[in-house]
Length: 154
Image (tube, rainbow, N blue to C red; front, top):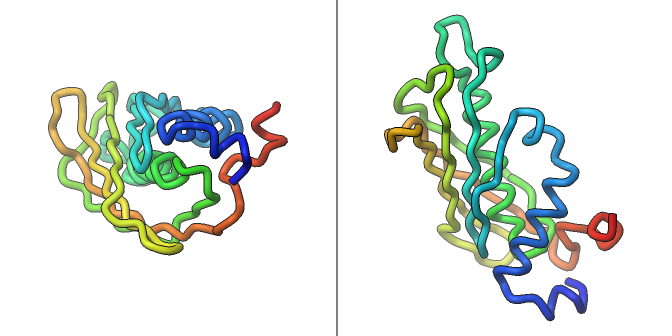
């Protein structure tokens, strides 16, 4: 972590990481994701289901829901400004999401010890109905910032 990072509150650090990571996150931006909230070990992101996200059954392709959950997980586990990547995840689809649905993924830290962490994400639709649950496992590269100083200055 940098000296500047040590002067930030945990919330300010999470917001700094959000801004720095999202600036370069073409995947999340390309899918129309919007970061609603971040905090230490947590994040909330919304995404509207578009026609190009539907599969052959006219429901949201599971890969798009997994990407929403994975992006939310990424912002939660990197919120401490330590470079953190996914080491794996599992997702369970509970109900279909349909065209026009606004999906909200809420991720929170379950455990963080040493270099590993576990994060749970719930995806709901605009009616508050759960459509999927996701558990992500993370690995942190200690001593490396999630947002390199050059990226933050850009």
